[in-house]
Length: 252
Ligand code: NAD
Image 1 (tube, helix red, strand yellow):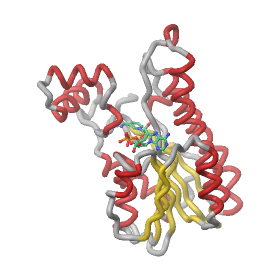
Image 2 (tube, protein in one colour; image 1 turned 90 degrees about the vertical axis):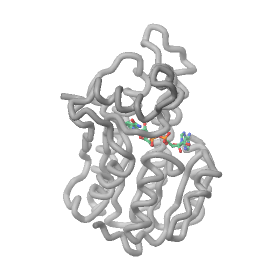
Image 3 (cartoon, rainbow, N blue to C red; image 1 turned 30 degrees about the vertical axis):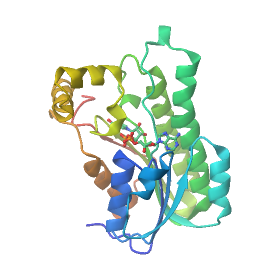
């Protein structure tokens, strides 16, 4: 069990999936205060966590949201910069600028702005994790925008790690393979698979995972949250500028 007693943590994309599981895990591990950011204000409000929370509903790619958060003047110990979208899949030859820009805006501009704010608000010894993806290290067709944004996020973590090291600030990335979250809903091939399973979403996830993952299953949000907490914790010690790939062997 991790102990984050008294810590203040910033979590983006906190309303759903990996972000929500991480917010819950941090609260359960004793965090004193969580600064939660997501587009979905209602879902943020419904989280009902056992610690003090400051809710900021907005777009991580909106600089003024970060101006407001920074203006509150808090010091953070932990940051999980996790908001992201999958975007509309298309091969590079058919990808429109709108498709490209939408993904880059949320996944890369959003990661940059949230990391910049976190670096400004961080106390000495702070620890941060950015959510990348295994697709940053293994090419997959149709997701040139998503994969490129996640490769850039991985590298942003390295630069921030080097910049923060003197103040003992650690910055790492986590690169999940498939995780059973709402990110998949609305992705056309996944929706088709759910339809083939007569609406059985869990069955569709299981089929997809068996097809592509050596371990035959996807991760749960709670598993990824636990791995994020490890990187955030003192057990992470000297780990900085690293990317933890957690993919059931997908990249192998
Ligand atoms: P999710 O859809 O359950 O959660 C993503 C959250 O981010 C949502 O609450 C959404 O409202 C929020 N969000 C989206 N755009 C935003 C914006 N512009 N500003 C603020 N909040 C925004 O999905 P998830 O799987 O939990 O995704 C979390 C992260 O994990 C993402 O960065 C995603 O790319 C990454 N990831 C997911 C998987 C997977 O298989 N699910 C795999 C690898 C990486």
